[in-house]
Length: 247
Image (tube, rainbow, N blue to C red):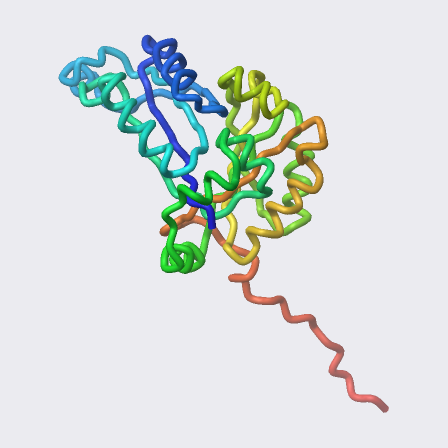
């Protein structure tokens, strides 16, 4: 298991150019930007010195060792310790569909990621204990329906789509031969751990690197969940049988 994380940063739109430059300097290859809006009251916003609730949200995938370095540097250089400047956090990945895609996203070789990985056998076992997982598929704009068709064929019940703008470090982009400075769609699918591999493989088989959609697919652990009724939880329907005795 390669120790990788899904990093999310919530930033003030007025500082987006500064954050973009920071990520370029830190050689973060894949960045997905989308818009958000805070829900805090105006009193809280005034107290924090924010003055507005509009936010930009940045997503990326990194090896955990590098993610720690990026977070530490971000806190210092972007002054996240000051209220209103933003926040960032990471979530461990459970799995990634394909080593080649993992290299492209993290901007590092699999060998280096394996060297830096601190994951133990106990941590791997803990990942396997999650009953549900969140599958994240990042694809070029316009291929959502095809991706969801493939996912449903593999037992997915549905998904949620977020539109984002992909940006990245030009050196990394040229080195790996992929274009990431374009519009992207992010599909979020909640699945059981048992069905996760089949859904991920189905999406990659139809929408992978050799296709125009260039899908990147990985999964995140879910601790608890409500509001999801799974097919396997439903009681099987009992077919009515003709009990008329034979003559």
